[in-house]
Length: 317
Length: 320
Image 1: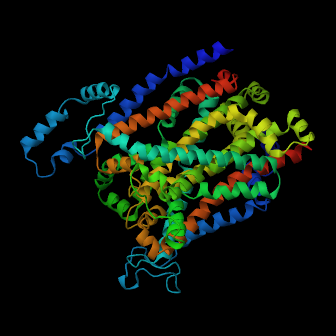
Image 2 (image 1 turned 90 degrees about the vertical axis):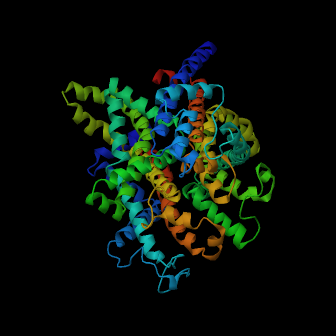
């Protein structure tokens, strides 16, 4: 049984290099064949023909695309993503790392709050199943999932900052902004989006557990619902929970494209958008490839977790 | 499995599965208001065809006004009537939903899911590998990247079409088509994978075997025996897909690569209000359109939420 899991894990992870190759080629060619000459961005519109050729040679734009790909991937493996075109003296890795320090804590705090709230709401809905509270709770949190986050944060800013004056209307400082009150609105926006999805998942998996004999026994013993929830219900929901936990973290991060833009947070998502519109190819390449690698890796890990949770899944593949 | 038996039961009755599903939801007193609101939203979109107002007409003398009798939803920074703009934005959203349902992601998902599940083999392998590529890339990042990079090429292409291209750009059809193409390309993947696994289990069931034995063609088996059992899954994923497509339109237009000026759309409206100065002085610009489209999205997702309960209670009722 254990060795079967290890074998399955190896089998899934062995695919990773293939995906890596496919995705890097895909993203590289999309970016390379995009209209617009990167030389224009580096040299500026008034540069002479000699300067342009010099730059083209220095950056390797004059070589065939497959050669550029190979040399780029060689550097990529050594975690050297080249220099940014917009900030020409800064390396992409350095620029990204600065932004990750802002975005990662924000996303992490938001997803921890969101997951915790989701579990709480889901358990509540299970215990109160069929009552009005069950319906009201889930539909209430559905509001935050339905309204796009770029709209939700504007509502929050309008209400809490501009009308009530409780919170600032924009991000304060760099990475340390997470310790100020300006972190509350973005965290609220990012975390509330995923609550209902989490709660529904918890409700579905725990409903089955509620009918189990041991839960009935615990109820008959007169144990407090909170004790039943943590000791009997949640413990048995843990493994299926793990499989959705990782993908759900991504949903919490997705909203940051809009939240960072609107709230003025100097984070990774905003930097990515600015780079896309500023045609900063090295940054787009690095974010695209790293992002899809992270996403594929989590999908493979989730697959393995599914297998651990229920070894029968391998038969369906 | 319980949903499958519920639909199998439905298909025995005279009414079609789809209308059966509709009446089942209409009977639910919580789902009904959501259905009414969805109809109202579409009515707003249809109203735009008969509305005489011009969504692009600027009147600086009447700019920055709140709601009044002359301008029901107020006016924006350039003095454009917000009611007219909301009508046209609702039209674009509505058209996008209908296109997704009839031409885009939905038929694509059903066709590819059924082909992969029923026929298997090479077709399945190709469909699933392509799907895996789209699943591997973070959806929103990919959509933004792809659209932003493809946009200039796309604009050139349309522009070179001559008078047709001119018309397409002027009416905003070009923008709409791009959003439709991008969303159709991405959103079929999840549902198609789900349909595939369902079709695979139905394909191996006894009644399909016996239908084959009787000499039924593949087409007959698919349309008479397999598709009717997929309807609840289709309903769920269709509602989720509609919400996803609407959200994507808003996201793309927000960043200026979806529906673009002078054509109104909800995403473009919310990008105009994304500064606290405008938000503070003209809250009606975000509150009114925000509530209208927000409630629409909520109604769609609420129907999806209710559908699970309705089918579960229907199943219990039938079982008892």
